[in-house]
Amino acid sequence: MELVQTVSQRQTMQMGGQMLHSLSILGMSAEDLSDYLTELAQSNPYVRYTPPSAFAARGGEDFDVVASIASDRPSLMSHVADQIELSFASDADRLIALRFAEALEPTGWLGQPVEDIALLAQVPLVRAEQVLATLQEFEPAGLFARSLSDCLLIQARDADILTWEVETLIRNLDLLAQGRSRELADLCDCEPKDIPDILAQIKGLDPKPGLAFDHQATPVFPPDLIASRGEDGWTVELNRATSPTITVQEDRLADGEIDAQARKARSKALSEARAMALALERRGDTLLRAAAVLVARQSAFLDNGPAHLTPLTLEDVSAELGLHASTISRAMSGRMIQTPTRAIPLKAFFSRAVSTTGAGATVSRDRALGFVEKVLREENPLKPLSDDAIVALAQASGVRIARRTVAKYRSALGVGSSYERRRRAMKA
Image (cartoon, rainbow, N blue to C red; front, side, top):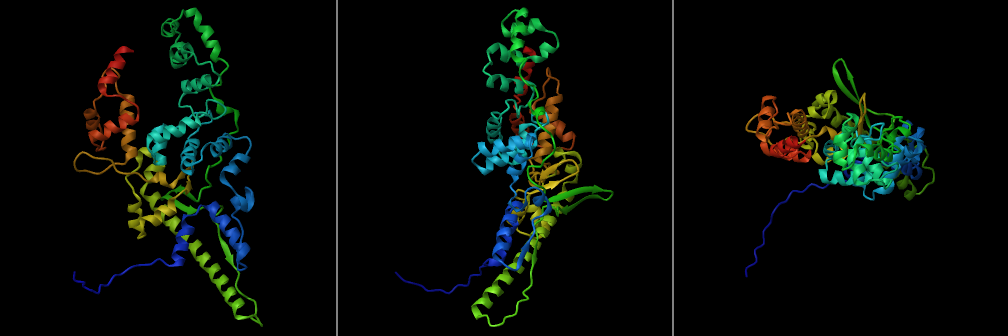
């Protein structure tokens, strides 16, 4: 065997400690960064840190998001946030649960379809449904219900009164409201005179359990940014009330007779303080620049809602800013932006393009899903539309999507095929 020795040149890039430190700071939440700076100020005499006003007003430097919500007695959000903390061991599941919490109406019902929340949390629908199943076990029973009947079913099950007759009556409350007692009795397999007795079992249930709580709006995550709309369009700025900053105390001590080791320690501490100040400045600049791109690209979303999202990825933002996609991801992680109506996670501004039919502009997943949901909701039950017909309607409306995309979204919405829908309508 012949050994051959060659000389090759390889170019590598090593990330310096200062760059790594800056990336670490970029990925920290405002709360974690506040804790970190508090510890740094205690160990470094050249760092002076004053917690942001939002933190100081809510408990000072030991601010904790879920704990602060829970202390605002007795809001609906604080109540569910406390139970979320106890019920979910995984941080990822807690985040999904908090997305559901943000969708709660004052009644305690969900104000958004589960499909939309799953898309917002960027998780499969199955996983979102699993988290929701746990949330629907919270006290008082009936929270996180999707509708009135769902709320009453949860409460009846919790009270151990969910017989077959009670469930049938709850699922057909519309017949009761219309005075169609004979039809309702047939479904319950009883006489019309028995309906009041069945109804009496559910009269003690609370159709709107959330109304027992105070409804002061308390964001789950303090917003890092503020978006506002003016005459010239949308603008964005850092929320100074939650933006951690430090003051670097310059070294005014005379060297005197101190030894070289002490002088070196002082110099190191001062350099560390200056590096931290620079890292914080870069953090704010990166976050603001990235948010400005999101707001500019998704102004229609801010004006009209998720159905007007355009396709946008981390790679698109990183290309526009000349930064690596992983840097943008760190800047976006867990960040919220306050709009005139509500606080929104920055990741809600991103939307993948869906499969399209032939050439043409792509559409976002949210817009495609919204279109399919609207068409299915408005169709004639006796003449349900095929997937191909929905594709044709979408194309006529400027939404170019593939048939397989329609089928996937229809399935996600829990809607059967046109044949299944026609059979169900004919039986009704």
